[in-house]
Image 1 (spheres, rainbow, N blue to C red):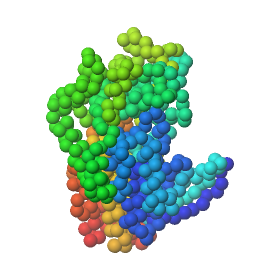
Image 2 (cartoon, helix red, strand yellow):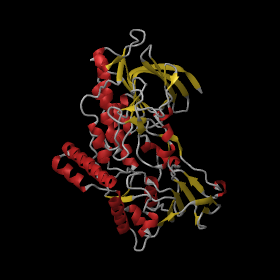
Image 3 (spheres, one colour):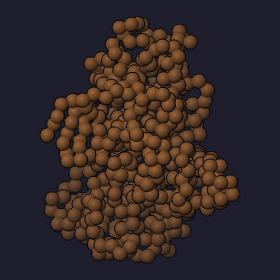
Length: 507
């Protein structure tokens, strides 16, 4: 059942109440206490990824001391934390900083239209009541911040497997894991070798509802590295220096530790391969074929390393309840999976941990004065503002560092742009990439989900302000000093002053 449209106005609208959206809303509320902000979330709960994914063992791949917010210390003992702990942390953040006052759950933005005449975005929103009733709503905003992530929430990537319909057991995708699914006593095959598979394998063998056996079936190996579940240095820093300073020192430690590791592995790939192989071999049973199952054909950090807290992934293999098979799938059968080698893996459950479907702006297709915006191939100003699109920012994080470390810098850029407009009496700011500017890929990973989406992704330029680095330390340097550049053009609404004004003219 649908009802007529209602209207709400705001100075700034943040779309998405996941980690990025909540962090952005908090910063922008601090930056503009006198402006009206709205935080719109299409689902019926906050949390984004951490509310959507409920597969066994769902956890962070990075230390939450760094993955969390700089303004709210992570105080739980576990540095590599489960999804329930991260959801609780986000709920505390919303309540502690009053974000619940601006939060609108079940508000799904379906369209966004910019009018130069009004200097305003009109967001088309579908509001779903608890009983399923849909109401159409219009939200008008002067500035939009998209914290919608980088993949589709309604669809995971599942390649075609011949014979899929013949399999007599359950086929599950981690992105759509059934609540309270019982896998106890079952033989499970997880198709995939990324972080999700590495997480699920030991988790499905833990506790009273443990599976009988879990096999990770991979076409190509990944680098898997053990890291401590509890950061003892962080615990010491918090104890000695107190919550605020100890947390700040922990974040600095983690940022530079991670940057050093990535730099060494990328700069010296042969050394990195040998080091990671040596570390892996020590974790596995004697005689294990390390080079078949844990020696990827690519260099370290061409794809993200998979973390296993306290080596739980390797422990499951040592105990004999799990194994890794490196082969290709011929077809699914009634009993399991027939491999191209001729071997059959019998299974009661097949988990297709085959990746994500990337999507920009949460699937929203903005228009500017009636012209559709195609972000594919469009360069981003500081990896955040879309060339040719007024008063809109998008949050993209790092591939070789903790994703969320970028939130503060992106919101600082937004705040500078809005303050510049407020000071000079302008109401429109649009980045315009120089004509003929060479561009390059935005991300530098060879992961399948990124390669599949390459043609649909925005791009970056070769230099500031159109450059984005994939590690925090390097990218942070690009945000030093004034962020307003001549490639940002300011103007008043078309009815008053149609002439675009460069930043030099506006100064």
